Length: 135
Image 1 (cartoon, rainbow, N blue to C red):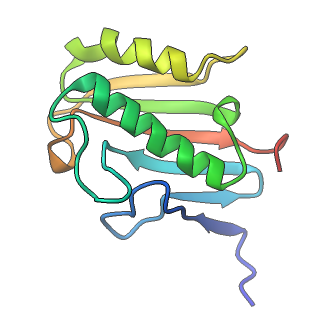
Image 2 (cartoon, one colour):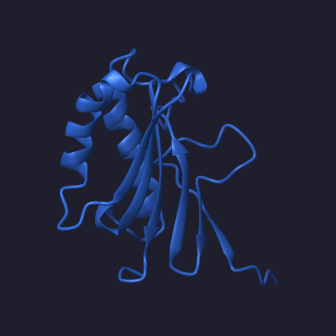
């Protein structure tokens, strides 16, 4: 019997990990989600053909699929980190992000520019969610 307080979260509604990590790990009521890029969960191919808006929507869909697999929803997300290969895309990303997290309390957030992302993606987002109210 595993007495670890860690519970891996996995869903077919988000891309399978491309390395030695889990889509998310649940510790009590805290969910720590790995970064998601714009991979199609079925084909494993990148979505968007370099279009930042399409990539952003796919990334957020993937991320929220993992949160939902753990029993949460977008309002449970309390912290995100956005990684962009071009900070000039911030305004476009921010518009879609605001539509996704149209909650009474928006998540805390950091946004940084990085030199490169897996599979040539333009954006990656990870998050932490509190599932205390939904579990």
